[in-house]
Image (cartoon, rainbow, N blue to C red; front, side, top):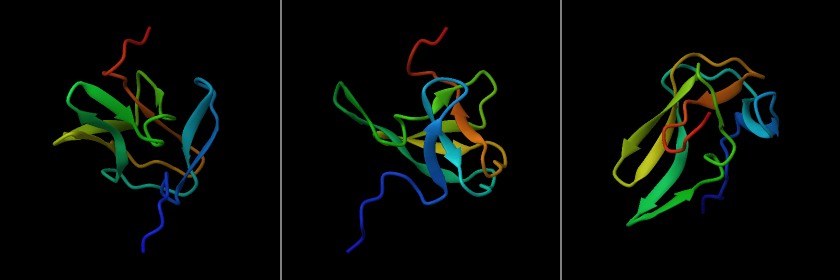
Length: 96
């Protein structure tokens, strides 16, 4: 039986210079890597996954969301180095 893991082995959560806690690479991640599901959509409800709960907004993000069926997937848009924070341009929420 496969054990539930909220994050891939190559990610960790730690203090962010952007806001609160953020997602950080523990090893290099290649461009176009599909990391995992950030949100589930069921009728009018949106449920955020542990992965989606810690990714911070950036005007110069290194990840994007891919919508597939009733899920949003996080995918890298560039090579990410170990220690680097993964970021996303928020489009589901209003950010100043």
